[in-house]
Image (cartoon, rainbow, N blue to C red; front, side):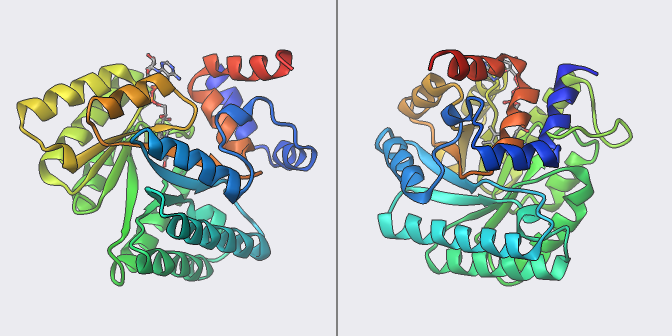
Length: 301
Ligand code: FDA
């Protein structure tokens, strides 16, 4: 088993997740998670805003199997929306359908999502539907399709590791989209395993959506892709208000600031809350060097 699969395996381990939450074992997650409550998160968002950086806020949590937990997550997200509005910060939200009951009952999940999207809509706040693993993909598209009949403040994510990503982007081109490589372990029947193919497909998706789509969020820490996009938008005269770069909170902070200072729209993905375990393990899977974050926290007490 390689390191990537090892950490993805850990990210899906329910026992370790519960253990981490209960005993507050943080393993260095503090530097990539913006606090455990709304007040701490809003402070970080204000600091980022002051540097010219917009934020998308993720109230951490996923793969919920109890209705009560899904309702609690919904209520917490409604609090986040109220906080964005009352503090007048430059931010929107990112949500995961599995946190809101997708695995329990799709209609129950739809109702939770509707409440969130409706409240956000009242405050003119955009809601991004994060994309999770393939087993949830079509259900998530169907939830988005249903809510789109009533609301237009929603968008989603296309993952370039899927062979069918080019079809998905054609179907959803009129949405505000975040384009990523993909963070889950997917089988070779449905997804590229080869990094070069995943990167090439991401570049295809970015170019396609910049030319044909609505607002594009280019979510990567990869210099090669960022530099390619900078040249592409120059060559094709794509205005800066048609796209933004996105990165995760705590990663490549200097580059985040540099892009904002160069005049690009920049948005940081800001996760917060106590349910940080799965999120953090996926970050270790993507880049085992992130293990340095753990080492620093453990040894620099
Ligand atoms: P990748 O990890 O492939 O690295 C490529 C190169 O970039 C490296 O070789 C290195 O040169 C450089 N690099 C990367 N990280 C670096 C670092 N920390 N320091 C220095 N250099 C670094 N996934 C998903 O499935 N669903 C989703 O909804 C989302 N949402 C999302 C939002 C945002 C804002 C981001 C940034 C990412 C996601 N993702 C995601 C995760 C995404 O799919 C992907 O797994 C990670 O972003 C890792 O891929 P990268 O493109 O960042 O570079």
